[in-house]
Length: 391
Image (cartoon, rainbow, N blue to C red; front, side):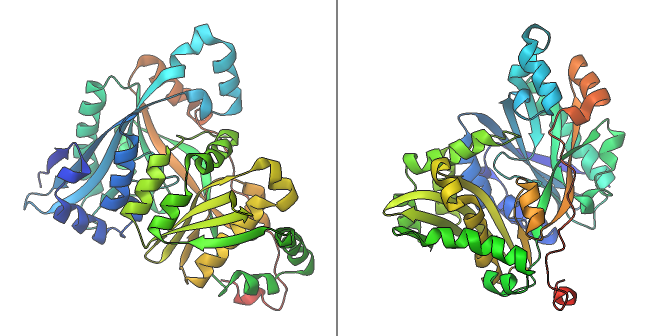
């Protein structure tokens, strides 16, 4: 059955009926929600170019949709420390990687998530072949060095396999961590812990009992937009700069757009010292899933108040109280998340070089292009009498 395609230059131009039909039949990912996409597009246009593709089958029914992005990165910000060291210390040899042009099937600002959806009834081999022809044409037109499809989990292994035959290589990325929704609140979770793990958490929580320190969960659009100033956003920038793998640093406009586009689905967890914001975490509740996304904190107060830990505890409490079936807690702080009982699932991207040097590098040293982090096993943290109830 022949497939046709339409390419759009803005999410505002997309055939939304067809787009939403594919999204509905493929799981309703919030990262394929036109509102989320609009927030990314509006805030990232100065640094990225965007396209949106819908594929139709021979009966003109929508079969697949995808977000495409052309952007420039510094490979040293993402690479394994060994390759990053070489890039930074041998500039004459690898200076080209300081401004690497990538063509991505995906979006900036959706960590650990894919931006490609297929209706289950369609053949992925035929669909991906047609889609990749569109991707290759646009990547060539923009002078890109490589194409990357991102990011896929274990459930995507089978249907993305046809891309391997098209010359793509799978590359592991940091795993996604999940918290089991086995409790109705974080307090109930703490009660189920072995004594020493409960004491560690209580020790952190007590640090917020200082005078002038308070927590809040904000949901009102106007209140959040008033609060989230450039000064507050700088706490996010500081945290992003300290990350081992430095993904795109999102501008303040992204968070303003996120709040405006997805009002009612966004929570902002905030810790105040008097009237000043000293830590915050952006969270997204979409259907049965809850995502702890982006955070920022005052590092001068972090050790004294355990700000990162307390942000995580507050976010998890919010997710549990909302009875989320799946709780995503991000791709960083692996040891801490394993210690509180999170489990991890591997993620990967599929990449292909378009220049001779990138083709060789991806083929023979692809796993050096992204920081590698093996998934850590969850800790044995629960009391014996409650283990069997923790699903």
